[in-house]
Every structure is written in structure tokens, then in C-alpha cells.
Length: 437
Image 1 (cartoon, rainbow, N blue to C red):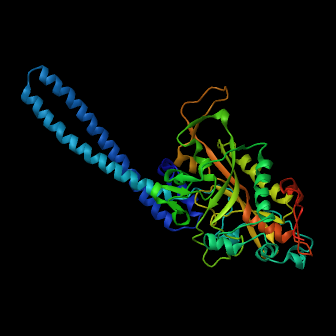
Image 2 (cartoon, rainbow, N blue to C red; image 1 turned 90 degrees about the horizontal axis):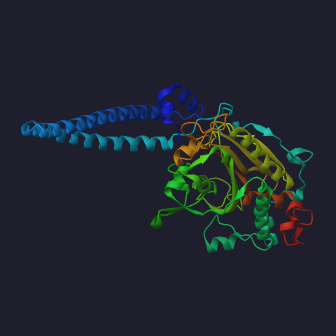
Image 3 (cartoon, rainbow, N blue to C red; image 1 turned 30 degrees about the horizontal axis):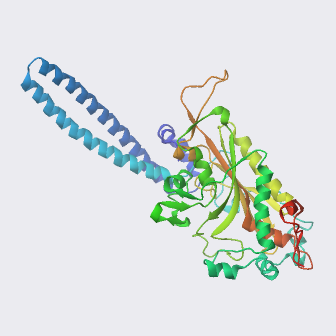
């Protein structure tokens, strides 16, 4: 969430930053937040004044009783009881106003980075790197590559959507044989590629409401999440959720930053907003495997980390022989929690479209403020500075299986209908270098 103190002291700057997101309702919401914040401070001041008077009366009552003035003591005690009722009412109002303010803070999006490009939708996202396409561009793909992966996978017996639907429901997928091996190989390759800098973690894939709230999925994206209401648990939409909350409520030393983590996990999404979109094959699924990379950092470390993480993902995609580009997400297309964000997209010639395969984002201290993740800063002399600061969080999809799997089938399909497995995956494929044939 944003810093309410910043809204209080620099309201015009906050309004201007959020106006770049193009949501006119935010201005009204900010007005309400400022009113609630002002009332909260008034209540706090009134409550503190009442408490001070009660404490003063308590001392006076004690002195009067020592002096033998019983009637005077009883009069002051009556005043104290009346003030106690006032204090109770103020405390109740404080809780109500504080809860209302927090509810609003939970839905206000993050402030965009000054360098984030302005725009209204994904059509305004500029291409930063690439596109890297064959000679002739999009028209340079061969006819045998222009077959969609759901047809390729079904023909080769490595994608079984029909039985996946029978077992579960529509928009669940099942890979078989070499297709399943390919999916697992992609995850292991992503873990091994990033093991030089990121600690591997195997987190829980069911998390509490508080954990899902910390990363910004709740309350906004509740309809897109799978809830286990009996136990107040949620299936994670990404390993970002448990990794971010590993240090919730803790204070790190600055020497521990940046702290880097990676995790393989299944991910679960209802895809509630997928109506009217292409959901065939592996393009959109309720369950899929993904390797996530995440970092906790200082404000100063974050920009270089963002660049590094984007570069890592792009190099992996390039090593798989996939035609790709890097785009920067504009203000009108950015997620609620994002401060600055980049997508890596691959071109799938069989689908005939660019597919987002990774999003790498910097969240500033937006998530850390929700999760209360702080660090002890140190000065130039190495000594701890007074107080603590919120960490900055960054995360990215190192490799999400479905669309990468799909793009491999379409891009590396040969004229005889077989699939050439990218060379970097050979060590993970149990000797399979060609699928089919």
C-alpha cells in the first residue's frame, strides 16, 4: 500500500502520480482517505487528552483521599468515570475509522515510477528490446511452424486436454510422455540457470488470507483466486506470494540485502477475466507450473536488480531458441502493486500471436508496507542508523511452463512433424532430443 504520510504531506504529488494510471475514481478515493486520515488524527489527539486528564484525576483523587477529603475525591472520580466512557467511545471510533482507511489503502494502486511510460492500455506498451524474429519477420516462419500447439501436442500424444477436462474441468491441461518430461525439464533448467544468485525455496502452495493480502492479490483479485474457505487458506497464484511473506513482520540487517530467492511451484488461477479470450491449448490454464525469482532490497539496490532480473529471463528465453521481445508496461496497463514492470513475450507462429511468458516487476515498498518487512540501515561508517526502513520487493517469472512449452512446439516443429528439443534442455530430457517420429 502507499504511504499515508506521503499522501498527507504531499497530496498533490500523489494525485499527479496516480492520475497517470488513468482511473478518474482514484481522485475521489484520495479525498475520502484524506478526510479519514484527518479525523483519525483528531480522534487520537482527543483520546490522548482524555487519557492525560484521567491520569491527572487519578493522582488528585489519591491526594484528596490522603488529605481526608472524601467528597472531593468522589466528585473527581465521577468526572473520571465520565471521561472513561468518552475514551471508550473515542477508541471505538478510532478502530472504525482506522479500518475504513486501511480498506481504502488496500485498493489504491502503487505510484508509477517516473520513468514508466504513460499510456492507456497494452497497445501503448513500448518495445524495449527486439523483436528478435527470423529473416522476413513474422512472415519468415515456415508453413510447418504455423500449426497451433494444441494440434501438434494432440497428434504427438503429448497433450491430452480431453482427459484433463474429464479429470478436472475445462482449462486444465495434462502433458504426457515426452510432453510431461519437457514441462519438468523447463522448470529444472530455470532453477539451475538462476542457482548462481538465488536461494532455492520450496514454499507452501496454500497460504493464509494475510499472506495473500500482503502481495496485493487481496482484496482486488479475490474472484481470480481459489479459496479453501473451511481452513481460511488460498491456493497460490504464483510463488511470489509465499516468497514475499517469508520475512513478514521481521527486521533484516542491511548486510543481508539484497536477499534473493527462487521457487518452483504449481500455480492456480480461476482466469475469471478470460471470457472472450483464446483459451485453447496451453494459452490459459487454471493450474500450471512456474519458477519464480524474487528479491528483497534497499531502494538504492532495486533499479540494478530490476535490470539484472529482466536480463536473466530474456537470456533464458533466447537460449531456448524462441523469438522474443521485451516491452515496458505503461501506466494504464500496470498491475495494482507495480512501480515499474517489463514483460518478455515470445512469438508463437502456430497461434500467430505474441505471448507474454514473463513479467518482471519492481514494487517499491508497496508490498513490504503491507507485510511489514523492514531492515536496519547502516551509515557510511558501518554503524546502524536510528530506526528501520521498509525493503523494496522485486519479482519475476523466471519461466512459466504453458506458453513456453507451446512456443517450443510451434517454433521447433520440423517439416516431418517432429519437434527438435532445444539443446539446453537435453541434459534434462532422459536422452530425448527429438519428440515424435
